[in-house]
Amino acid sequence: GNSVTQMEGPVTLSEEAFLTINCTYTATGYPSLFWYVQYPGEGLQLLLKATKADDKGSNKGFEATYRKETTSFHLEKGSVQVSDSAVYFCALRGGTSYGKLTFGQGTILTVHP
Amino acid sequence: NAGVMQNPRHLVRRRGQEARLRCSPMKGHSHVYWYRQLPEEGLKFMVYLQKENIIDESGMPKERFSAEFPKEGPSILRIQQVVRGDSAAYFCASSSIGGKKYFGPGTRLTVL
Image (cartoon, rainbow over all chains, first blue to last red; front, side, top):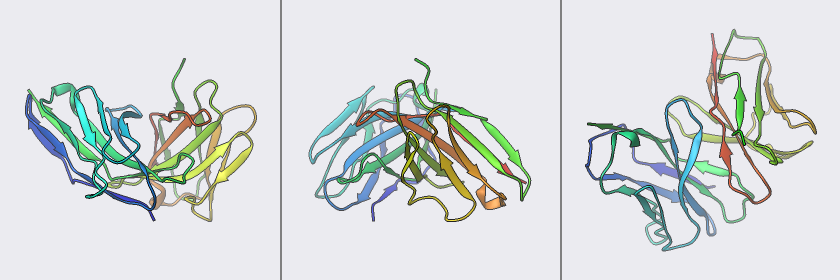
């Protein structure tokens, strides 16, 4: 079956530091890959996505590249802000799935001024 | 356009009671998904519904759990005779056909 493994947290950084959250996956076929963010007290929001190998998703300074050879979709940001503090979830949707998502366990990010 | 609404946001039940969780999808959305997040774990798919139909319930426990999405009104996730292991955050998401999925803020169920 499909599975997603995320870097364990929590991650604590100072403002303007570089961020990497690792994500690897196992899936049959050609899944689509996603990063979701959850701010305190809110629902999950789609941050970025990639639907095929070598695609790069980007949004709000965050980037992730779909690497089929390493089955990875690591999230990066060059300079984090305090407002980026949240929980980040990596997820995949199987190639034959209608919309059902498989999530990683989430990574808590805290950014200090 | 209001987002996906879930209520209650927090629900406390004693063992053996029933829990009813409601999800109002975004306007125009006819697809609803329920996910459960146990402590220290990621979200796990439970069930996918369209209006008046259960499309995929492969993630639902076989007993005590049921879900519906009637023609009118919110989607309901019902847990009968709750046990402590049901304590979790339950998230609902909605979408239009083939559209982007929007998540609600979740209901945090605590079973005493």
